[in-house]
Length: 249
Image (tube, rainbow, N blue to C red):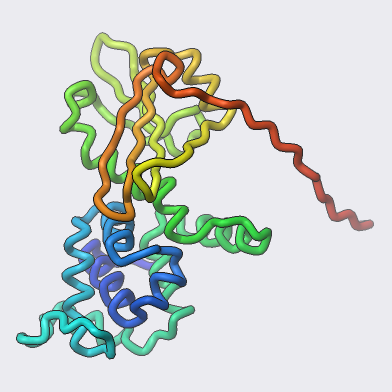
């Protein structure tokens, strides 16, 4: 398992975006650099501006239209990352970036490859926006929100309980928060049948926390008791063809 400090991860992201430029954005599924800075930054738990600054740090040594920080020498801790990784090709560097950014890198990379093989849209960017980046955004900001600020947070993203975070406060019933992410100002969010059922049961203790506009400037919208709001949920039933592969043993 790869181990890097948070700063080294951010520097590697900046190096990748500088070296591969538009090709790197396309490979990862980003529409523009601002989206890449926001999504990678929030996913790692650093300021998006830090990712941009590290990209600018390396711009003078790569052929692109940006000048970057060309009036001063590259900082030593950036040079320490640049020298061993500057020769990586697009495929190897993309894999490295996913390994150090994905929360569950082995499983996330596997699921991404399977989805792409099945012709499903499931790029690195989309997986982060709809999950990790939005969740990190919430974890970093929830104490700034009056209704949540005094609560103790518990990460439930891997429990399948119907929400992403459990917020607890002494002598009060716990709250459930389901986090969703959108790359634009508006879009469609989906609740699984489990999430829908739990939300119905918990009523005003269930919150949707939607992080919007990763493409430009992320902001959030909070919906308490989704079924007592202006949201209009439509049931979508999908018929699935089950494929099995049999063999004699």
